[in-house]
Amino acid sequence: MINPLIHSMAICPDMNKTYPKIEFGKGVYLFEKNGKRYLDASSGSSSVSNIGHGRTEIAEAMYEQVCKVSVLPTHAFSSEMVENYLQKLVNFAPQGFQKAWTVMSGTEAVENAVKLALQYHQLRGEPNRYKIISRWNTYHGNSVFMLDIGGMKVRRELYAKWHNNFPHLSPAYTYRKPNALSIDEYTKSLLTEFEQCLIETGTETVAALIAEPVVAAALGAVPPPEGYFKGMKAICEKYGVLYISDEILSGFGRTGKNFGIENFGIIPDIIAAGKGISGGYFPLSAVFASGKVMQPFIDSNSAFLGGHTFACNPVGAAVGTKVLDILKNEDLINHSQKMGALLLNKLQQLLDLDMVGDVRGVGLQCGIEIVQDKVTKKPFPAALAVSKKIGEKSVEKGVVLYPGSGSVDGTLGNHILITPPLIVSETELDEIVEVLKTCIKEVSSELATKVF
Ligand SMILES: Cc1ncc(COP(=O)(O)O)c(C=O)c1O
Image (cartoon, rainbow, N blue to C red; front, side, top):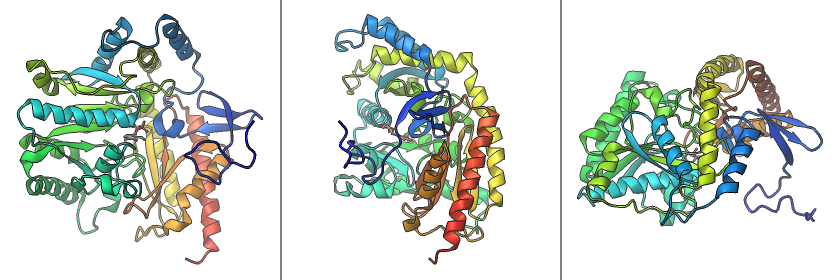
């Protein structure tokens, strides 16, 4: 019996909110028991249900595998299902990748990517390379370790005493670049900042740089300026620093390529992926290691010192295999590129609205930034929670978006992430943009009556 005095029995969500209860999902839609329909333009908690909801062929693949075996004593066994899947993952990765390993969440995958980098340096006789350089306004997961490495100030604060506080670089955020700099100069300034940071930190103490290709939840789908990642990778190579691409959100077709970083012409050393890897049908994520990273492990015959009960789970492998089949058979990665271009184009029309300062994105990882003043780019006061209000209104109107805040300085700034399933149609994109437009207009007129 559900206690009527408590909004939700879950520990985490908003204590004062009653969440609508979803009974089932089909395609891009979620349905309540009473029939109310929501277009899931967020794809779960952003970019998860890439292949859409309610896919019975996934249920069948899962059932078949569970009937065979659902968990293995991995210290003693592997299975054909798992080995074949890992091979498929490696084939899906950019050239030069050699091995993969699956775990359960994005946080675990990124943490394992970092551990792999640390062990790589240890095995090569450089144990002093233990620092990880990342950027402000980026998210790499919710464990205390990953919050430290990530750059979301509000989320980090509570655990600050546990943190190492390795260097964080400025985000590559063209919309908010200093006005005095051209894009080229801005890119150069970011690269100089990185190189300077390495030198000041001690180049021989840095293990890896970690970056999201298109910054998702923390900035609202921000790609870097042209040449940025090429420059960052070149600096990494110059100083023996590994490059980790956090593809938890950008991977598996979201940006119109297998991995987001492939839009920027570089090949990282390590990739962490999650979310869309299983389409949300199983808690699954993966770490991919290049041949370069694997070499010292092979040369010294050393085991990777990671380990999780559900690592390389055969049911996860069955689901992941089916997801890869669907991506290929339905040409969803190209579809994502095509629909992404259309979505970006349709979102550009919102720039006519007073509050929409910027529209950006790659593939179906798109976002808009909401500002109080479009000329000065001044954000709204944080207490007004403008993006949250727009997000809540759009849920009421049947479209689920992913609102975020803190893009300007960790606290100020409002953005909305728009990441529909990769199976989305143009008509559904129109529905998303229309509802978003109405919600922005409504919030805008509500704010017009306020003094702040
Ligand atoms: C870029 C990025 N890295 C890591 C994570 C953490 O993934 P998870 O929530 O599955 O632990 C997320 C989650 O949103 C993410 O967007």
